[in-house]
Every structure is written in C-alpha cells, then in structure tokens.
Length: 168
Image: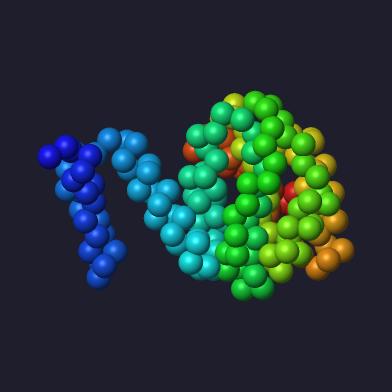
C-alpha cells in the first residue's frame, strides 16, 4: 500500500482535534489547513476577527507568484457569501476595475466586503496605489450601500490591514 493512500489525519469530532496517522510533510499540513479554512468559510460562518480573515486570506494567496486581487463578499452579519479571485496581474501589480467589483457585490447581494491582494515580494506594506485604489473602491461600493470592512495585503505569511492602520 502506498503511503499517500493512507489518510494523513484522523478527526475527533468531539474535541475538534486531529491525530496524524503517518509522517507528514509540510505540504500535507498546508493542504489540510487550506481545506479546513475553506470548509469553514464555505459554510457561511461569520468572520469574527481580523486575525481569522487574515489567516484565511494567507492560506489562499501567500503562495502565488503573481499579484491577485480578490474580494471576500459578506452578508449583513458578516457571514461569508463568496471568496472571488477577481483580477490577476504580474509580479508587481494587477489592474482592478471598481465597476466589476461593484457588479459582483450586487450579484452576490453583499452587504460588506473585505478586499485583499497579495504582494509576491513577500512584503505586505501597502503602496500609494493600494491606498488610492481602496479609497476609490470604498467610494464606489458606498454608492450601493456595501461597506468595505478592510483591505488586507498578504505578503507571504505576513499581512497588513488597512482597518488596523486607520486607512479606511
């Protein structure tokens, strides 16, 4: 029997813990973490803290080698409706069109959003262009009563939150 056919983890549903059933690689652990975070957010659970959203966004964007601008669409109780990768760019930028973000927010009937994109350089420091774009998106979404809760820049395992920095 091949080692990959042996399940990596066994779940204990009562305690919420997992037991390793075989030796695990870092790729096994990352894959399982992505699955768990995706399942949690795909079920429409509420985002209860900035750290929770940042952890999820790191799992989705940190390993990408090109810039991707995405939006986490939320209902009025901040439960996840959808996580959409909307624009893909190069290693140092992506063209983002506010009209398309507004259209998608209306299609999802979202009440709020968390904007996000990655910096493939691994440094999550927001640029002037990031700040300007966030203001344009916040203004455009406000016209249709959709609140921007945060814009999180992912750089490797690190994040920068516009809300925590007072940029929103």
